[in-house]
Amino acid sequence: IEIRILDIFRTFDKVNQDNLNLSADFTKDLGLDSLDAVEVIMAIEEEFYIEIPDAEADEIKTVQ
Image (tube, rainbow, N blue to C red; front, top):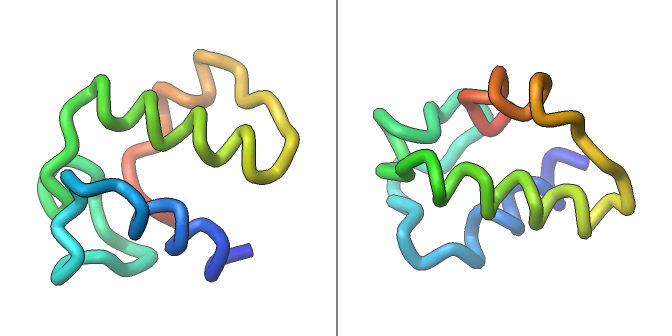
């Protein structure tokens, strides 16, 4: 699962690949804004065929 998640982040051009690891913060380490974070969450939902409720998605701040 972790490898699949990291692979999703690798597909986004805006992600600072040098700082990409499981503990990386979306904003501080990867350089993503709120819209980018939504796109990442949507990509994760598609990859795993799940739906993450908005309230829970808002709490996701790191790759892990």
